[in-house]
Length: 302
Image (tube, rainbow, N blue to C red; front, side, top):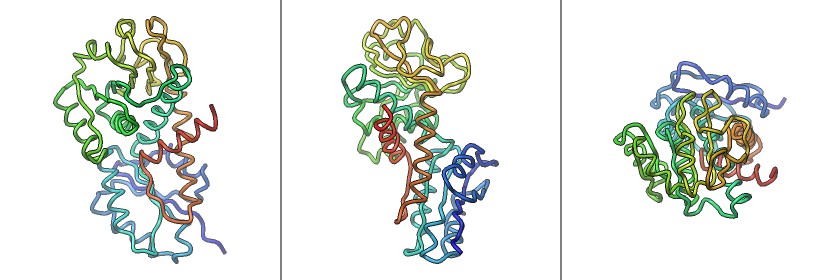
């Protein structure tokens, strides 16, 4: 009898995300087993318990998912999990804390699509503001966009906090190959004058970009908002917008709302969960791979 597909789902939080469980089961995992309040120091033991309980042949029917709330912690746990493997006893691992990696990937890929389709350009060299960018989605989106060649500035309420996050993104997630700058929310009226793209990734129900600021942005091309809770994070951009012109924009900017982003996020997470199932060799997945499959999905579904 063939062994069932088992996904061991680790989170540092007190609850595992029901969204992630549903996604795993819908992607074809037969069983999704939660491990809550997991400390990084416990990852090695959990991983090795999983890999040594099955033959090397049946291990491809075993996987590990890393959730939680913190991007750096999730990436650190992914690295620990990878180091804990003892070939040929090795399984696939996928990190997506709070869905931040797949959400960010969906947003950046959707923005890239609009830049190409509406403005005949790409992310390369574009000036991007990540408003409310100190959180998990903002961090991941900033890194993804910067690695694609954009010039990204993380905007936060406190400059010191924004600078700390920008340094983390550049050095930890960008491996020192990118430089992400920082700015204070109080100065965004100045930054918007040279922005090509805006990501709104702050807390739900808070307007981060007003109609007045949109009207003062001479080269704004695309504004994307991950917030589905009123009021919108970007004035004039609702959850259903998908390349929709933004009222009051003097530059002809278009907006992408939370549901349009969410669709690409959903597809990216589904594709990565299936990749774990179908790969003959173990894979270690995070924001970089999420962006790859989000791009692939958009290319196949223009």
